[in-house]
View 1: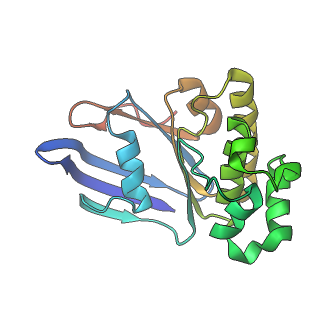
View 2: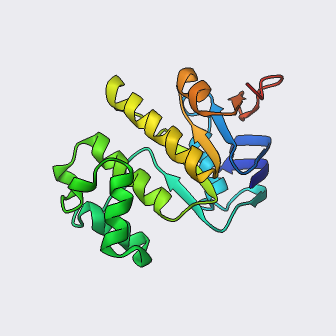
Amino acid sequence: MIAAEIRAKSFGPAQVLRDIALRVETGEVLAILGPSGIGKSTLLRIVAGIDGDFDGAVVRPERLAMVFQEPTLLPWRTAAENLTLVHPDLGREGALAALARVGIGDKADLFPRQLSLGQQRRVALARAFAGDPEGLILDEPFASLDPDTAEEMLALTERLIAEARPATLFVTHSEAEARRLATRILRLAGRPATIAPDKEGR
C-alpha cells in the first residue's frame, strides 16, 4: 500500500503542490494526469522518498521500485550487471532470468550503448521487478518511444504488474495509456496543483 498526504510543496516562494491525498492498495494502478510542469514528477519524487522537503506525510512499502523517464543505466556495466548491482542476491543466473522475463535474455552481456532505447527500458523494467516490489512508481516509462515499441512496452508492463500486483503510481501524458493500464485516474490542475474536483476515478 502507498498513501500520501501532501499539504504543501514549494520551491522557494513558489508553491507547486497543495492538499493532495492519495492511497493505492495492493494490485491497484493509480494514473496521474496533468499538463507538463504541473508537478507530477515532483509528486512521485515525494512518494518515492527522493524529496523529503514538503509539508505532509507518506507511507510507502519496504520494497519500492521506481522506473524513471530515462532508463538510468550505468553505461560501463552490462545489462546483467546493471541488475546485479541493485540486486546482488540475484547472481548472474537470476539476472539472466529477469532479463528473459522482459524478452531480452540474449542481451545480458551488452552495454547500454549497444541497446536500443526500447531495450534499455526493458532492462529498467527488469531491474524494477527483480526485487518483487510491493510498490511501483512509473514516471512516463513509455516517453520518446515509437508507437509500436510503446505498445509492446505497455503490454509488457501490464503483464508484469498483473503478475506481481504491486501498488502502482503511474504518471503519463497519455489518456489512452492511463485508461489501458490504470484502475483509477487522478488529475492534477491549477497553480499550485491540487486534485481536480470530481475527476478522481475512471
